[in-house]
Each structure stands twice: as C-alpha cells, then as structure tokens.
Length: 314
Ligand code: NAP
Ligand code: 8YV
Image 1 (cartoon, rainbow, N blue to C red):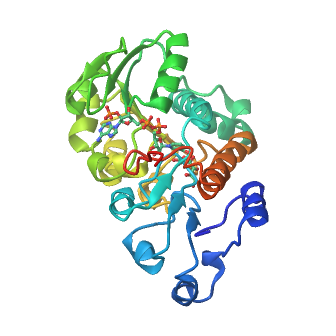
Image 2 (spheres, rainbow, N blue to C red):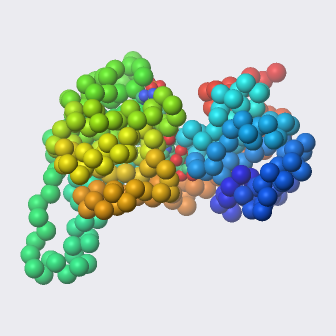
Image 3 (cartoon, helix red, strand yellow):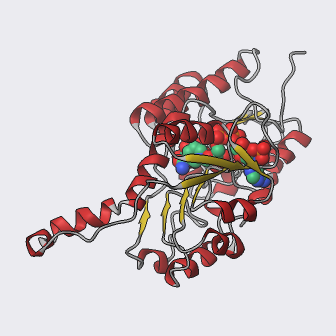
C-alpha cells in the first residue's frame, strides 16, 4: 500500500495478502529496496499519491497497480502499459455520488448556501433579510467532460429544466445535447460550466483566462473533476475582478493546499475533495480495489483495467 486506505479495504487486503505499508516506513527507499523482488501488487492510496517510473523501477516484479479512485492521473498508466503492468481504477461505483455533489455544489454556489448559513449563525437575520441571490433559472450549462459522471450530472440538470451542452475531445453520437468542439465557443454560449474532466496533460488548464472571459460576468464555474483542468490563478483573478460571478470547487491544483486568495473570497464555495466521500461509496470503491487485486492473483484477470493497460485472456 502506497498510502492509507480505509480499514474496510485495508483489512480485506491484510487477510488475503502480505501487506507492506510504504507511507509508514521511516526510510521508504530502504523499504522498497528490501521488498524489490517480492512486491507483485500495489494498492494505490488515493489521488495525491504519485505512482510512476520511479516506483516501477524499484519494484521489477510488479504485475498490477489497483488505484483507489476512478481518476488515475496520479498513475503513469502509459509507462505501466509499456512495462506490462496492469492498472485498475474504480469506475461506476462512485458516479451517482459525485454527480450529487456536483449538483449540491452548483446550487450552493448559485444560491450562496454556505454564506447564507454563516449569515444566520452570525445573528444577522435579526438585522434584516439576506440579500437576494443569483438563480439557477434560465441558466445554460456547459459540461466539460460528458463521461459517466458528466452524464449523471446532465440527467439531474434535465430535471431542473436547464439547457445542457457539452465539450469533450469528440462528439458522442448517442447524445442529444449540442456538442462544442471548442471550449471557448461553448463558454461564449453558456453562463455555467460544470467540469467533470479527468486530470493529466491533455486537460491541463483548458479552462483558462480566455474561457473565463468568454463565460462572462454572470458566469459560474463548478469543478468536481480535477483541479489541474482550471488555471487556478486565472480563476482567482476573474473572481477578484468580478469578470465571472462565482465558483464552486471540490478539487484544486495542489491538494490539500488551497490558495489563500481563494479562501479570502467570500463569494466562492470550497469543498475539500469530498465528491465520493460517503461511507457507502468509499466502501464500494474499496471493495472494487480489493476485487481487482484478488481477481488478478486468482488468475482471473483484472475487473476494471484502465484504457492504457487493456487485458486479454491468454
Ligand atoms: P469518464 O467516464 O472517463 O469521463 C471523462 C470524460 O472526460 C469523457 O467524456 C471524455 O470525453 C472527457 N475528456 C477526456 N479528456 C478530455 C480532454 N482532453 N478534453 C475534454 N474532455 C476530455 O470518467 P468519469 O468516471 O466520468 O470521471 C471523470 C473524472 O472525475 C475522473 O477522471 C476524476 O478526475 C474526477 N472525479 C472526481 C471525484 C471527486 O471526488 N471530486 C470523484 C470521482 C471522479 P472525450 O473522450 O470525448 O474527450
Ligand atoms: C477519490 C476521486 O476521493 O475517484 C476519483 O477520481 O477523485 C475520488 O473519488 C480519490 O481518488 C481518493 O483520493
């Protein structure tokens, strides 16, 4: 294990395998050197723990990396593929939970729910009503990354009677929403962006100053995908200059460090990467991680390999 995993999953791993806890070692390089010919599987401890060539070099007998999370930008999966190491992630089991948080965050941002709560607690209601807020009504929402979670967000937004469009690398033929090949063009046509795109080089800072300017002064940005998708400094500037209205963020560029400039802004809603963080869903994710490792070492192949490391039964 490269990092701490919930007991629900860690206990199952310990029952089935000999588990070494890398993050607890006072000298991690020494531990890796001692285990180099014995470790055959890695259980990844979350999106902030990097798994790349350095670890693969140290563990030449490695067969599989089971990542805790559907996003695996923390794992160099291409390099794993080159070395014949399988990478698995945890798709589907968290989709609805993260979509719920995206909608909750959107509503909280538009209707200023945390600020309203703070207002009441500070006793200010006794002095007068909270000022009127912006509204979800008549908003047009552009989804960046219409994948499993993006579609679950869109389904929920349909129930709110909002117009939905999307941007991704390619048009999806089975989707009725309008497709924008250009993110800037989509931003010009909407007032609300919900990003559910993965991290990594191809999405790095795709929501930049130009996109934010195109979104306009009524613009709301919600991000439940990865922090690196947004140029955080450009976002801070747009919020400070009020060239967009607000942002609701569950993910940040350098977690768990959140820029002081963002924290200083009262008109944003900030969550500490809790999209999938319910007991129910984290257990499902942990179970899928365990099931991938057990299935692999039972000779039945991985259950959910990522695209870069496909597996075919010999
Ligand atoms: P998914 O089904 O693979 O969907 C990803 C979508 O992103 C696809 O529709 C893909 O469409 C699009 N995409 C990929 N590269 C892109 C690019 N360069 N530019 C624009 N769009 C791009 O994944 P998912 O299960 O929905 O999960 C999405 C992401 O959510 C994860 O990777 C993870 O980072 C994040 N996540 C966050 C939390 C949280 O706690 N906040 C929890 C779970 C997941 P195209 O292939 O057409 O481009
Ligand atoms: C997890 C996530 O919280 O699945 C993902 O991609 O971002 C979240 O579900 C994270 O992977 C655990 O650190």
